[in-house]
Length: 400
Ligand code: FAD
Ligand code: SF4
Ligand code: SF4
Image 1 (cartoon, helix red, strand yellow):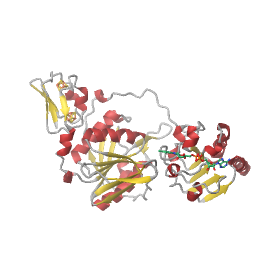
Image 2 (cartoon, helix red, strand yellow):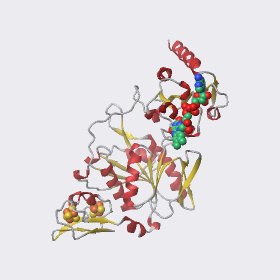
Image 3 (cartoon, protein in one colour):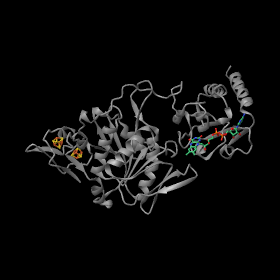
Image 4 (tube, protein in one colour):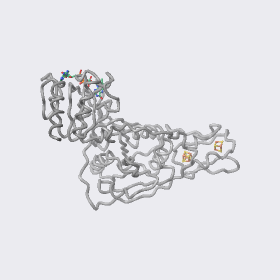
């Protein structure tokens, strides 16, 4: 489990970094008590590597039946214009999916909220399905940091033992979840697009082999069963006004020494209107059929007229027509706008998987047999280089 070896020189560095007050100095030696959650913070700071955690042994000793409940990690995001933070919409998608899983298991749905200061978010989390919110507040949670947030999440998991833990497959979730998984010695299924319960186990489905098959992954021998879930795949259920969640405060002491990375500058890849592609209501996307950067600019004009954001297929990104942050699809971003306009995109399965949840799909392609027409509600067979300028002209005239 966790051991302090004879190498300990009694420096005391491990005492202040322990978030759970589990280390004491006794006769100039570190002694670890039962409050230890195996978060690993002390291991990182020991100058002589005197502390070791045997995670394999800890995992083998786990009583799986004591793990109960479906948990969702709450991701917060900055509100543009420096107006504080809000719950990222993908969290609500996970709560909706989590609610169904929890009901099927007959267990609680809990949200894990790590924040510098809570701004009444438990109200929203309750209305979207959470029964309980594990809330940890600390000044050091002012911005996301791998070491600090993972220490907090690991501590809360080890204290309360959830059966299932879901994270968004966002930049933050993709950083946090693997760190937590490695620290508590459990598996992690990345980028799930569907979740279900079978025989009491979480079925974690995700595309495999280049998106050509769906793989169902189970974690029968470890707890919690952990998965990251793609944004814009799960539909958000209607909130239930007045539904409340119990708030459970989690005291976690965070030492500044845990922060190994400082953010010096932040550059956000937003479009001119400040909208991220995964949150856009209108996306005008282009593929290899656009051919040149100059032609691709027509999409910028059209998207500006429609109040949208430009997207791209991987082929267009590989050709340098658009930045990778705009790529839609399996290895790009999953989107679900109100309107998705696909121009000169063939509709490969890896593209479709990232946009098929859009409300209205319109495709323009010169090949009437292009697979994109299988998912498009409206199709135009023709040359984008002729159709786009006409569309732009007519929208401009209408705007006058
Ligand atoms: P093409 O398939 O070359 O299609 C171009 C289309 O433009 C054709 O249908 C053609 O008829 C049409 N066209 C040509 N000229 C005109 C014209 N003048 N007017 C109208 N139509 C015209 N792809 C993604 O998009 N996103 C991903 O995230 C992604 N991830 C991948 C992950 C893996 C592991 C793999 C193996 C592949 C991935 N791909 C992804 C690549 C994917 O398989 C396709 O190669 C890619 O989507 C093709 O892009 P495209 O439709 O722009 O190009
Ligand atoms: Fe070390 Fe974390 Fe255990 Fe404290 S809780 S003793 S920091 S592993
Ligand atoms: Fe001992 Fe290492 Fe803790 Fe220092 S940091 S007291 S050497 S276990």
